[in-house]
Image (tube, rainbow, N blue to C red; front, side):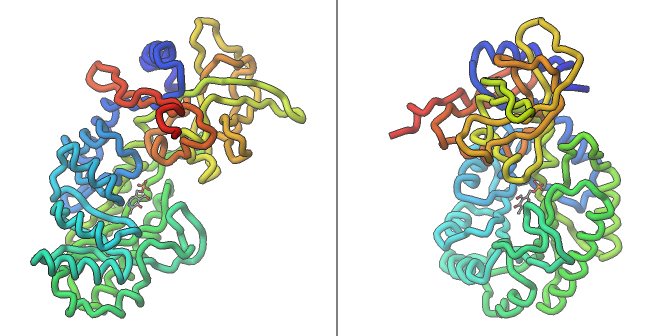
Length: 406
Ligand SMILES: Cc1ncc(COP(=O)(O)O)c(C=O)c1O
């Protein structure tokens, strides 16, 4: 069903009149039901964490906290946000390529349970700070594997700063790093995958190579962390993953390779579909035969289309009761920035769509507000609104450049 046919419309019209600017809208009732479904359909030896880089809004983190999901953090800011909503330190996992010695100290001071090491330096520094704090720290080693080619937001086969190769890990003598307890390995290089067969190929190869590495390094693989990567169908021709088939695949993986536990940190698959981004049409024109729309907000609010060259699904919204025309036109939709990169996609939308109408982008709950480039050109920042248990509240009101320019 189109979001415009649902009860959201009435809330959105009120919000448009009140906020008078672009905003994100998250349906936390939907999110709650979705997470309960994921939790109840998975094998008990598979643990899902929430990769909060996808959306660190406190109201969203609280939903994960209340449903006993752990949270994966990748910066001091994310750690502080996770702690501020009352997440227990035992429910925090620290990934990320940038961990200074000082940051590692903060992780230990805050009693973060497991740290994913992504470089040899991280291993040496964590061992040092663990010794200084007289403790043994549980770690996973992040491994960067070679694939047959291809690229993804997480690198695919490209060289990235995420982890190091199996050979590199073997140059460290972990027997000497006796303030670390290696409990497993982490490998995640492919994002937004919708094809079960592709997931199977990636996971089978990853597991085979991780078991080989654990064997060579002489430790027992208690945990294999496969990261995220479960995709969302942003394009109309794409088909959603069948979650029960995904969990069956994970269970098969666990049994075949006799893995005690599999972990994943879900980002996109957990939160993308609870969110919408709404922005008003500021201008309409034709250029060399193509119909263009310019919106009040673009990649300053939602950068993913420019980063991945993939659009969010777009739906028209009109504040008045005047119906849209039934004929459609192909529009190229741009944001307000003075760069050709500020393009949100090409869509077939009602031909009479015009200045003052709005466009709603769905599946915008992941990699939205915090992934954008909000300050360029000093346009207003979008608001963030949540719908939860019958209430519609605005934890983030809109901000204008006077709030941050100095
Ligand atoms: C270490 C790690 N785990 C999990 C995720 C979440 O990935 P996804 O949104 O594909 O679920 C990310 C995303 O960048 C990540 O870096």
